[in-house]
Image (cartoon, rainbow, N blue to C red; front, side, top):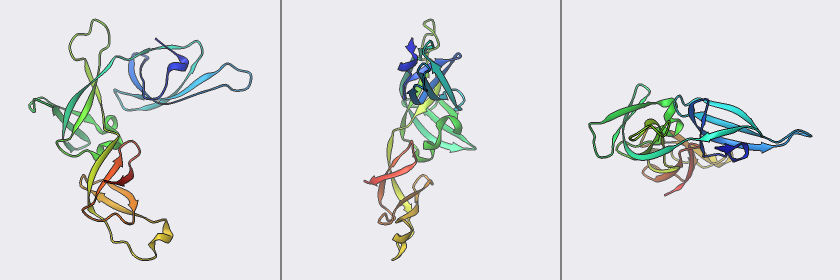
Length: 194
């Protein structure tokens, strides 16, 4: 069991019978009141993000989350399709809400971590498949980049480039077609040239 002040970001908890990932946690005290932990939680079943405030007396159970490697195959009609790393016949899909914005940086045949949840001690086997965890940074090739025009740096020095997955992001003017860039999948932003 976790106390209210142990519910920190990147932790997994069970709240109202469902597993949640803590995206953000802020412990503070307002004037003469007792301290509270204001959190932003992501439901691992639905992908929905909610804000919950935990008080000093609140305790939550830590979720028993395990990871295993799976392979990304393709995306169609808002569904991301994956298969077991060693058995391509075992296919399954996740909704784009569960995969999140980082899904647009997934390259076919790339490996990601699948999150599985065991509800109780009596739950045997691998557990229930509830989501995926993308690598924080990925390297992708630039397929389209407009040429830099002299004087464009007055607008901030950024341009929109297209990556090999079809995603578009803002990048500095010196990035050209064929370059390999490193992207942060959590923020969807350019990090550096690889």
